[in-house]
Length: 214
Image 1: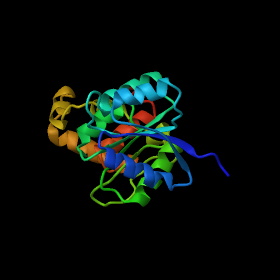
Image 2: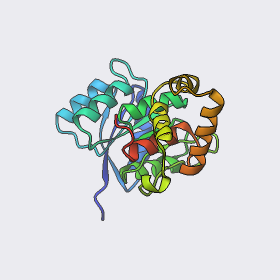
Image 3: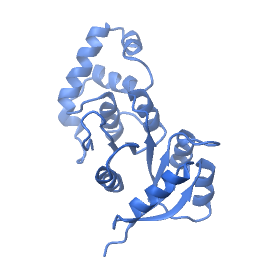
Image 4: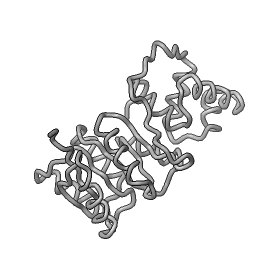
């Protein structure tokens, strides 16, 4: 049998954390190696030898939240995949999490089947985020995209770089000396050409193709 992926859970709500541990513990592909109540406990566990291929943690935790913990993990243990549980799904929030080194974002109300598929997707090296509108898997880029095939021009690359920040589209338009309408047209064109459906998809494309680095 294949060795299961190791997973550390972090959530300050004990009941939810234990329920997740019981649920994931029933997945043959995963083994729970630790639990934590906040980011500081995650760091303590990792520095004291707890094995973790994936860390699944709440975004809002006391003492040290998911953003801070993700940044520490990305800087000190980049091989660990980081998955965030959150009720927030704004594009800016997700971009901030990507900047912090997160590989996946899961809504707390997802179905157990989606949770398992998401964890397997992330363990395999892909990014994943819950699509709460369609409530189906929104795994992007199962195969490495080819930047040359997309034939992006300098304007499109500049737009992708700015879209990967927390700037609004209006601010991006001002920075690029373009009208908001032209920016919307540029964005929609990239959605079609790169086969993505959101700003987060554009950012993931930019990360995976080396256009930006966090």
